Amino acid sequence: MGLSPPSFHSSLVEKWDEEEKQESIETVLRVVPPSYHQYLDVFSMVKSKKLPQHHACDHHIEPEGCVHPVGIIYSLSNNESETLGAYISENVEKVLIRLSSSSTGAPVLFSRKRMMAVVCVLTPAN
Image 1 (cartoon, one colour):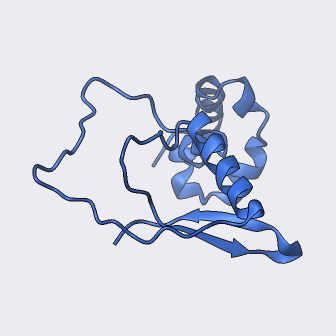
Image 2 (cartoon, one colour):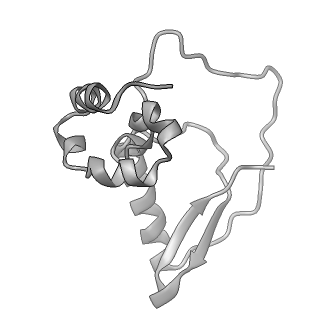
């Protein structure tokens, strides 16, 4: 049922890069149930902020004859516009999203949080 703690911990440290080593392994071990310790690298906060590398076998779905729905375009406040721009820039840099050449957009929901901060939440199209 998984590796023994000493060999597991050494293999875990070898897998993680320098930035990930800064994460507290003890904290992760305490939070993640022992039955999942063999998958600890999946629970890395650093790795969760990056997508795996793209490969030659990645494919694109391009449906033939598909017409994208055109929705209503709403104006954004300056605060919402800045928040959306920061969200897009940050996630393009992390390669979690990529710039699109589509003429249509995605629905965006802004949620006001405590202290009046605005949070951008991308929602899937219906």
